Image (tube, rainbow, N blue to C red):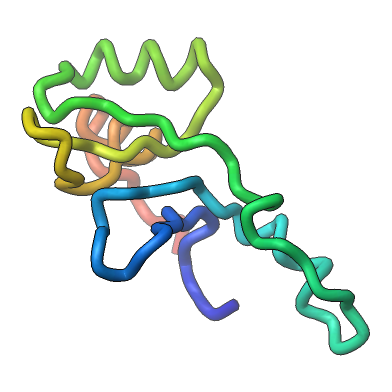
Length: 103
C-alpha cells in the first residue's frame, strides 16, 4: 500500500459516502498482501467507527481521544452527513502548533 496514511475509513457503497462501516488499519492488511495469502473478508478487519460532531470543542475531543484510546474520528455536521475526519495528530497540532519536521 503506497500511502502516508495508516488508517482508512471504509464505506459500504460508493454512492453513500456518509455510511462509513468501519476503519481499516493498514497494518491489519499486511499479512494478506503476500502472494500466497489466503482470501479474507474485509469486514472482519474493520475497527469500530468513532463519530464526533463538528461542534465538539478541541479540548473535549482530545480528552475523549485519550480516555477512549482511539486515534481517528469521523466528523459529522448537524444532519449526520460526513464533513471530514480528525486524528489525534490534528488535535495536538491545533493545541500546541504544527509539529516541526525532524529533517
